[in-house]
Image (cartoon, rainbow, N blue to C red; front, side, top):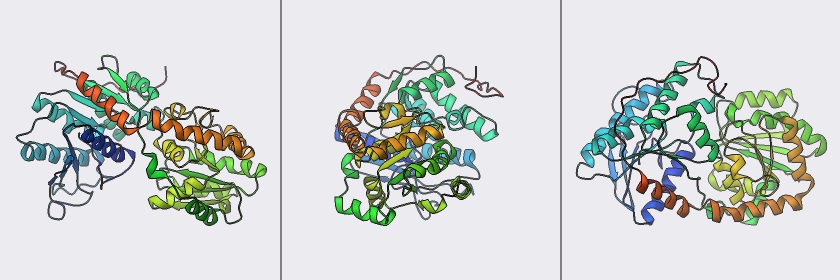
Length: 412
């Protein structure tokens, strides 16, 4: 597996996904090597390339001396880490050849394609999200077009493709097809035990975040525009008209934090919102378990791992019907949903949960029960291994650059 993040280097959900998947595959008897990197900003003197042995062998690659920064030089930095990764794989793993190379997202495209070509084995690619999806179909800046074209290359070069939801499979087909290899849907997994919270810890979290005993709404995740947190803040005045003591806890960091604070101030609900930033895992799990509702108002969501995490903690769910969230949460059965961007619908959905806590608790219980059948990591690993077995290396095809429309790529 090739991934630009892997514990202890974790940027988002992708790193946790690759970690859990690789460990489950190893537990099932597969020989797994993960090719990843050392922390951003380090170099070969502070964090040299190392091959860690264990159930999963992990080759962590040192950054080269080039003065490249992730945020300032994203594409150049991506090419540089993968150049290091290819060299490391060919030298540290010279006597080992995989049956399949699995590249996770565009930041692993160059290394994944190169290693599959050198070893002459099938390339499997998981598309976790797309640049077009993250930007609502607009590819305006040079960086957006560069990322999209790399995603296009990886998708068309892959001998088998995996997406985390049926919605993402449709998106991949629309953006990168026709002529793609088979696209299989393999949901993300969850380990519910990691989110089990002692009732006393949940009670302490409620006392911390809602000392007056009112309803507690929780959002956790990245603070980016596509996550729709601005809609949740905009809906809070409507929610508080029905439930005056309701408070919102926003957990996470991102580029939109200042905008969200300004929005809360403009809507005169700033005193009812707590922007907690990053919380330690135990504190986050306790806050989620204490919530009267976890609200996920995404405009774009390939899957929605946070919904599984909230379900594992036993929290009632209110989610936008965006992408994979509509598959993870069944409206009226395992949660309540609304149309993305519909502020009034969001407020109504939250009010439905707060007005009937018994029904909300029942839906939360069903959501947690579903984790074991539909989102168990052992099953996820088994389905992924099936994709590996079925993958067949296709004849190489020379690919030119994709044509990128000047308007919205999803528009007719």
